[in-house]
Amino acid sequence: MNNVMFVYNKELALSAGQSGFITESGAYIITINEAKFTRGKEGAHFIEISGESDDGRKVNYLNVCCKKNDGTDNQYGINMINAIMGCAGVKQLTQVTKDANTCIAPELAGKIIGLVLQKTLRTKRTDGSDTFSFDIRIPFVAKTGQTLQEIEESKVAEAVNKIVSTLKDKDERNKSAQHNSYNNYQNQNNHQYEQYDDNFSPF
Image (cartoon, one colour):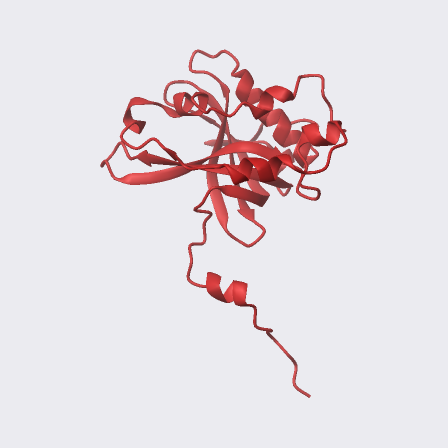
């Protein structure tokens, strides 16, 4: 009797040879590998998330700015972090030293979360060539596809599909050299996280 080892899957076959990283805007189910605390050259503070999608593609450098260059709170970013925590089922984040150069938030490691990512085209400062990065538009609960607002209002999952249906890449090429990471983050037109007030708890 022969043991069947593989069954042909057309979708998997077509993905062979493609990039091992997420390269397009869209909604993804992400397992967070690491969330670390970083600081920009101008003094802004960030939480930087890296992870892997459910189909094995990686994503790195998902930065959420929580403090501005002048040290004051960036409320937009703080709202974003709270939304990520809520969708991941995490009640608090602590800062733990991983090594001499890295501090992490271990509570997010291994958590599965939905993220709508928007691709931003940029120009490298070093050589002027094209590159890209991703911004988090909105997180959602991986199991249900709902945003925290939809859960709070007992609504079905619709917001993510609506956002993705009109989602376009941002083109900031030839502008990147004039803006640091915080300014790029601040210039986002999306204000989804303003709907999550500080008193809301998904737990």
